[in-house]
Length: 314
Length: 204
Image (spheres, each protein chain N blue to C red):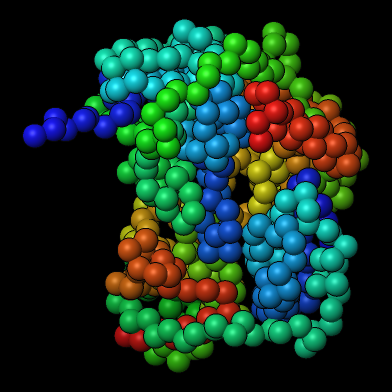
């Protein structure tokens, strides 16, 4: 009798604060009210996957403020990209069977993506492996990781490990001062008067602790009461800055509801959504106006950078 | 047409809301049928359609769907279905809903089950449907303080809409009753009971 090989994967000795399986998101179902979900930091997800030899779209773990402590079952490579968590952020960690590695301590960052070679083997639901925490489906049993969860990885096509890359991935982390988010005017900007717009683009806001994967709530000067009861609900996009009835901005993120009725003063450029995901609650942010054309160019340049990493593999 | 993201555009429609919504649904169906390159999500809402896409999506190709006069776009989605939803009149706000319209609960329900509704759009949570067809006399404001948990399957009223909560979530709508039907069930194919444009009638 041949011995049964235990599945390769990672056991959560400690789950971390809010660790979820995420991929590039669940697209094409917004008309049925299904949130996109997916990693808040798409660039980190793609680069972490590339470091361990995966496709960009493979499922990884998004870790938040306090990362997990994991024990390897079988040999596998992991990589953390985004915020600095664990012993070797931005580099491949080659784990052997039984190795324990802690990603608990965040050094100034809110989030990072942890990819494992093969990608995490959870069911594809509506085209994606992402967790939708609010509706409790997708990812690992539709929820955040708990202590004792075992995440199997998809077996790679060959048993040989990909070559190790020496280059470390370093994404922009929030510095000491205000975090500057580039943004362009939102679809309802014209509904705000000159003073309100000047206040929005000129103010410093603090990321409030009640923020989550649906949206970042910002504390700061109120833009004044908004008439919202008679507004028609409209489809929402990631990065949209909506202003609530009491005049406070919320930046909508990956797990936002698909429709919303608050006026939308601005849209954070997609190029800076990763930086925003890495920024801890309590930090100060302000908005810097760019054009939507510039925002597109920045994304196109990033696409070239990501696709050329590492070594021109696409 | 307004920019809602680097590769996202909002098409908006004027007029009375139910008519604007019908135009929005027609435009959404026409955009999907056109098989434009680079379209990712097409989201009809109260009086708008959000189209998100990849960098290959050409916004000039979307403009025509906003300006096409009513009647030129295929307004009725070919797949539109009719649903009969059996309800229990056990909502916590039934008495208040009825008395605000000057009716007894029994009289209100008698009128309610004769009304034809149309699924205008879905949003808020997976499978949550916004139904048009409520007479103006029955339009009610949301409750001042939302409930922390509304029972799953709740049939509820707010503004011009009747909505059905697919799951137990926080909610500020006025609760009329409940249904056992599942609006979002990943074990069925398709997982959603309703699609925009579907017809709905309630039965006691």
